Image 1 (cartoon, helix red, strand yellow):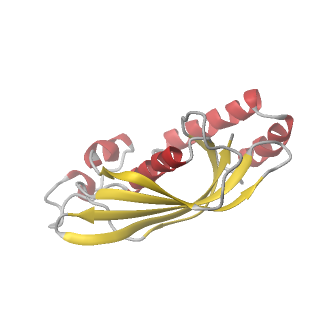
Image 2 (cartoon, helix red, strand yellow):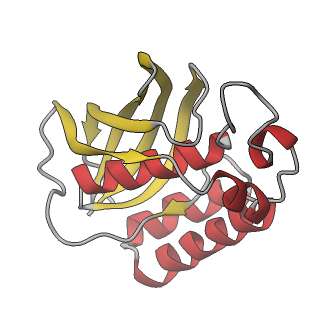
Length: 183
């Protein structure tokens, strides 16, 4: 995501909490967001899995074929040749790492539709390259949940992403640990 996209998303989340959050959320999040201790992100969802989240692994059905690598690279002002030129690498055009994370977030919301926002990251390891045409599959692990007095549920999540391509066996490509606020 571009710097402006990241900052604007952060401000939108701060506004959503200020306008619609509980008193506890309003006291807790904005001061920490203001100094960068907590970063805001969001996703649109529908009612469903929310506060009563079991500690388990959700396997997301199906997979996503990685496409649009040059378009997303342009959108995020990434000018690296490996993201634009199909001939830059013998194995094919690389997908921008932020593209992989964005799709992983989308799949986490599919698995946990009560997700309101990502409020922090613990780690994000790109374990291997993702190339245009790879099929990505996902497992979302719920590692811990907390029910803060200010409402909702904070869930410590782990997104494990695997890429398969027709000519090679599957490989792990992303191990992302983050905290999400659930309705």
